[in-house]
Image (cartoon, one colour):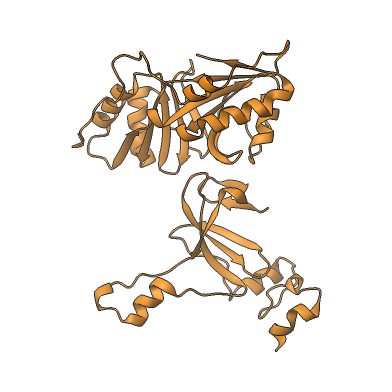
Length: 212
Length: 130
């Protein structure tokens, strides 16, 4: 067991909690959706995000034991459970992003630390630092084509892929957990910019915003 | 725009995601306290300004955030190869001419590295000829 002081940074009560989108929602009226919106934008707020760093072989064993998901072995891929609630994404040769339902991250961190023992690793809880935006609908890919330099054609970006790349003038992690469903993991400070960029880019296809 | 091959991401990515980080393969003096001013100053401040084949460090800044090495031509901007940190380059100034000839590309072994690198206007090249 590593000699690290752990504390749960999630408040006991979620009352009054604000996601990184809160400011945007307060300052911008939701636009009325057209009859046949081509793009749906939603936020998956308050999820648990952990950054795992260390050797792939050691981490893989621990993540399999604790989460029941294999660590993605190939670069720019992600693995998830059948329900799609828990996912592990490759960010670098020694870095992975784990996203779990909100409230589970602290327990998961403790379990992983126990499973990893004295191995050389690092786990950082970054739940407060980033949020997940989801993009779906028939024109979701067109919106991404306008926004990122990465090739999002299905032949280059199959389901289960995830890359960190340039989004507009900011940075985002773009992943494709399902056929017609994209996720953007954005930094807290870029959330407003990214969200409003998405609304602007998606305006021509008709866009609905789902607010929590 | 270049497509640069990131040896860690294992694919070609846009140039926009990368950042150049200067000359590669610098060796830090093993004993800084007992190194001469020349050695230490050279390590800290003085870099080669090669015309032709140059080994550089690059950072995949928006991506896997790893440093890697690149061998490229500073005159033609041709990228010969990228390779991971700690590895040795397979293309060097000594063998680039041979490699070019093998792959059927016309090349010179000194001066301008490739024929295509010569500016169309000779007046641009006066300094070189002087």
